[in-house]
Length: 59
Image (cartoon, rainbow, N blue to C red; front, side):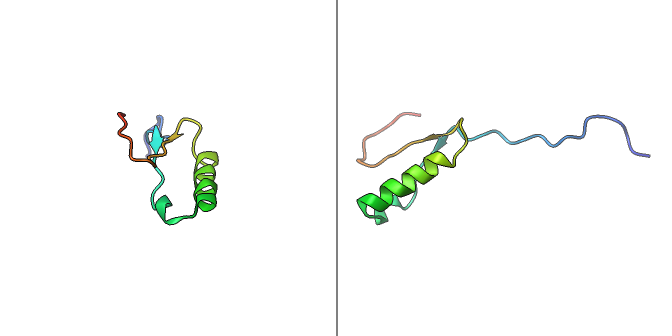
């Protein structure tokens, strides 16, 4: 007999940051499209961090 109780699957933690990968291979227009797509289709709680330019950032 199966035990009664809460057997819901717990969702994993949501990522807070996302980083574009391989975006340097694209033209300026393609890179903008790529980053906009990543930004528009990520979770609301996830920030797309553009590391182009090489400036250090603290997370």
